[in-house]
Image (tube, rainbow, N blue to C red):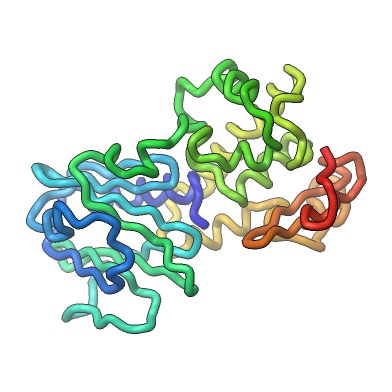
Length: 287
């Protein structure tokens, strides 16, 4: 799933390639991708793009005198830029193509979604806050005003485990499954430690890991073409998706805990005092 660093990089890429250009056609291929119907998708046609913004994992294409085209790529969605789009309209079918946006130059982008769980979402709205997922977002962890005091206040109200807290978009915007694993590994904390139980020193360590991990990921992604961002993300991950490999910090074997629709990875030596975590489906989780 694209998370804050990849969506931030896509925002920068689209800013360079969309702003100042006119959207001449928006072609839906998978009707399920459209989550709003008034104004219609065609309302953005004929308008110049004035800005591209990011709200958590949402991308917002703002037009001059027209509505906003807001996209959430969900778990298996992606954006593919093309300097020259194919001639003729795309044909609906069983392929991954969900939506095409064409500019007056002949360039544009496709939104695609792999797999059978169709969760990619496109909204046409007058204001991004009309999108329910945007309206409920918590603070952006890379914002200038997201300081340690604000982070501490958020955690003090939480009785949940850190893994779930970091992934809660209404609490902190933009962090998903992969970067929550990376942040906790950098902080040397168990994913199942209770947020409210953190000491002041642990809170400082987790805040530093959050900011550093995301900032470094954004810097790695900056300037990378849209088509290469997935590979860049994977190459920069230390523990997520690396079950059975050696931890790059201590050399211990990276372990996994599986859930019904996802999994997490961690290093026992770095994060849990050398003790493997029990499978959540079989026993209580360790702190």
